[in-house]
Length: 121
Image (cartoon, rainbow, N blue to C red; front, side, top):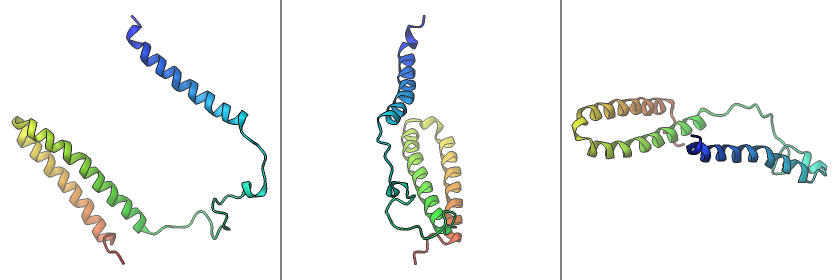
């Protein structure tokens, strides 16, 4: 009765064992000698020039949104094209689905364009 669940139970036990044993081993086997260089918060060794709570330019977020929009577009359109070719009886519904998706993408592009993220100066 439980025979089909044995692989799942083994994977769960393996994950739980790794989640407990690896941090514990790291804690017990690590070298705990500290020095002032290890205590500094900055990785490159340069002194910190400001606080960690500075405001970033909106362009950083716009570039991230551009990447997400292009990524979603690619990830969605390729499988859609394959499904469109295979499901000819649902062609009308699939076309409507893609038009709605493209309109949503167009709204994202217009928003990014109006915010000035496409101007490289």
